Image 1 (cartoon, rainbow, N blue to C red):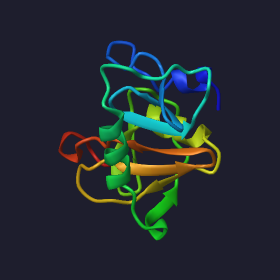
Image 2 (cartoon, rainbow, N blue to C red):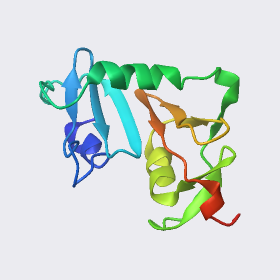
Image 3 (cartoon, helix red, strand yellow):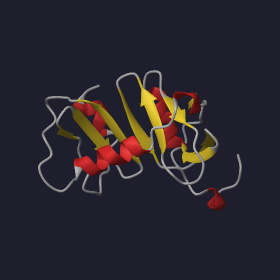
Image 4 (tube, rainbow, N blue to C red):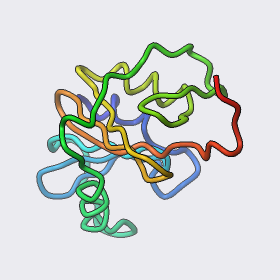
Length: 137
């Protein structure tokens, strides 16, 4: 994974407009998805504005037993559409991003808590959509 690879997971209108590093990891987020990978040394250390310790606790809180993960289903590439995966609704844009990650699997959890995902080279969390606003696909 490169700095350029991580950039797509960053928001363009938020504090997190570029990847950042702290300690042994580099991170990227747009407030809907958070990805963590082993440190990429060309990505600057985050000094202000982000409490990385809180991000770490947030990630760790959503890790579930390995038996509760499943592969990402094939999803149409429609940015503003949504699909059901691991029992909940997500934006297709994010599911397609996860499918691009090697060996990515997504946790099956209930409610509106973020789903943890694991891939060869890192992990992260993805926020689901509130199912009360969407029809079943």
